[in-house]
Length: 68
Image (cartoon, helix red, strand yellow):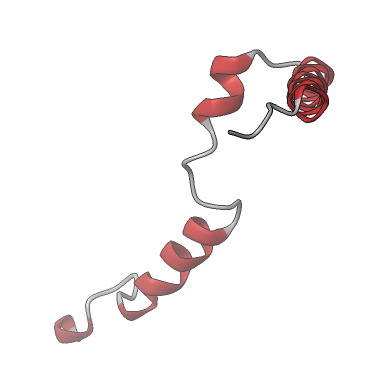
C-alpha cells in the first residue's frame, strides 16, 4: 500500500485557501457581496440583447403602409 503524500495534500489545501482568499479580496474590491456577484453571472453579456432587439423592429414603420 502506498504512503500518503502529506506534503502534496498540504500544498493543495494551501493553494485552495489562497485562491478562496483572493476571490474574497476581489469581491470586496468590487464593492459587492457574494449574492450580488453571483446574481449577474447568468445574464447575457452587455449589449448583446439590446442590439438584437433594436434591429428586429425595422419592419414596422411608424405609419401603416395600407392607409395611404
